[in-house]
Image (cartoon, rainbow, N blue to C red; front, top):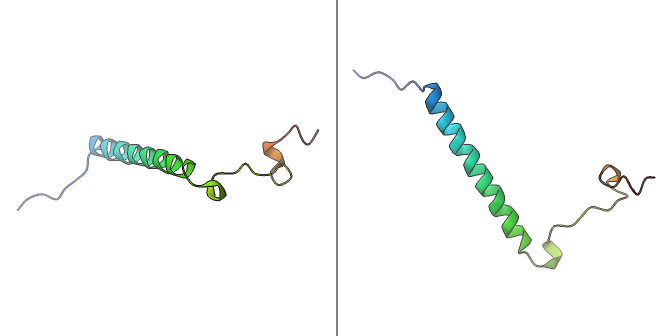
Length: 60
């Protein structure tokens, strides 16, 4: 009878590296696709009144 599969540290590193690379590629793909959307759906910068921590110059 064959032994069950027992993953080694090397196997874990390879799998996690592949997952990380896949997530980075997916993120870049989403960013590229969303930049090509028509004007009402494009990424917008939040208003300074709603996000004061992003706009410290307004809160002086």
